[in-house]
Image (cartoon, rainbow, N blue to C red):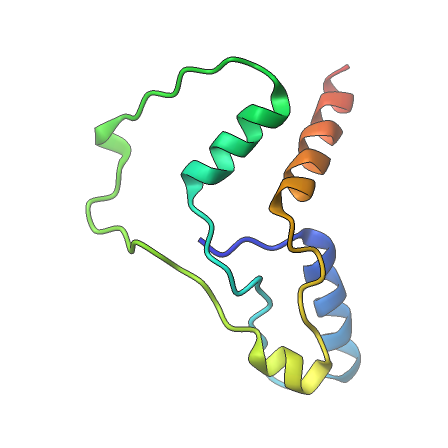
Length: 102
């Protein structure tokens, strides 16, 4: 999947609203597996987790890799993703929710 940091996307929305025309694909342009996201979140949490896959919940016709192109946004808006470290975004989200549950 192609995941982006919310701060990058909000910045892109602002640029599109101020000077854009048409449709823009705001994305990271990189593919990251769900397994990598899960492993990173487990590492950030510091909690020992046993992951079990449920075959009944796996989609049979899954596309193996999805990533977008932000070329139109780069050319017309000057937008590119700035926060490319997925770990920092996941850590921000994890820490936010930990504070909410305290």
